Amino acid sequence: MKVTKESIKQFLESLPKNEREELLSEFLEPSKSSSSDTQRLSRQELLNNKQGECPHCSSRQYVKYGIDKGSQRYKCKSCKRNFTEYTGTWLAGLHKKDKVDAYLALMLEEKTLDQIKVELKINKKTAFDWRHKILSSLENLDKDVFSGITESDETFFRYSEKGKKNLSGKGKKRGRQSKGKGNISDKVTVVATSDRAGQHGLNVVTMGRLCKNDITRSIGGRISEKTILCSDSHLSYRGFAIDNSIEHHTVKPKSGVYIKEGVYHVQHVNSMHNKLKKWINHQFWGVSSKYLQQYLNWFRAKEIIKQNQQPLSQLVKQTVFDIRALERYFRIEKEFEMLKTSQ
Image (cartoon, rainbow, N blue to C red; front, side, top):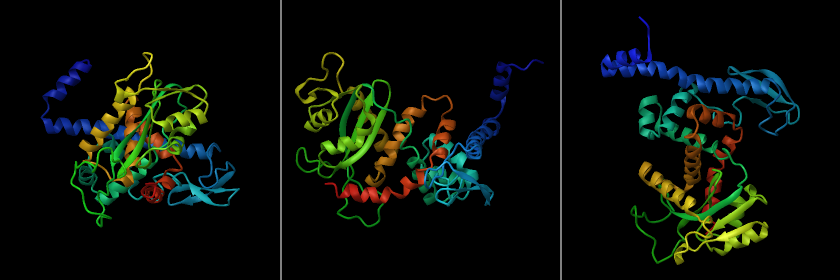
């Protein structure tokens, strides 16, 4: 009997639901694990072929230096420090590496921490820490220069200490608005930027009102003479454009001017604001301001990875190869303290 796609489909449909799901999971599970195993192996091959760099000083002068807990160890000739293929990545010092593949797959499905805890039989705190280590490795994913018409606009998130046991002030009811019309002093400012070629940027910049230096920190390193900035009439954007000698067009939505010359508008970034806030409020019921940048990284990565035919492989490749991920993870607390004092 000739086996065809249709006959396989009919066979699967004839099975009881539990047997069908079990059989499908057996087929799918190896593919999940093999993708990240391959990426880990290729990172080791990269180092073995002298194409990697020391995670401590970025030198390419290193030699093999024995085995460390089953992993190849290397010694840098420049800084004299040791490292393995995991050093600097979010996998460094991680126990239960055999669960990493399944964790990444569940994260792609946007499972909650409680669901991940039950499915992988790990502590919820472990699931939480892994999430933010992974998100730290997504910060520089696909960050090319903005080219052509580039929209930029700010949006605001209410300051939150979600998850903290001892709040610095009185707790606030979810959904409550700020006191006073236009009062944004208690809100976290996020700059969203997008060009027509599909490059995106989402950055937490300050508390309260936006200034020119905040815009520079957010997108200053990603513009060129080919960038055509489009924003609202905020004076900070005008000053930023003048300082960087780039073409600048403004629209005035509050005055009913949404599009200028048929092409200049900020509707793409405003749509991004809308999608982002719905995702954060509905998926997580809000997030702590301390970790807001991490979730912005996640949202941005989602928009990029969803266009890939192998999203899991793309996620693994990005997270495993980033040797600055752990450094960013340990910097979260310090950057949060700086944000709180930026009012």
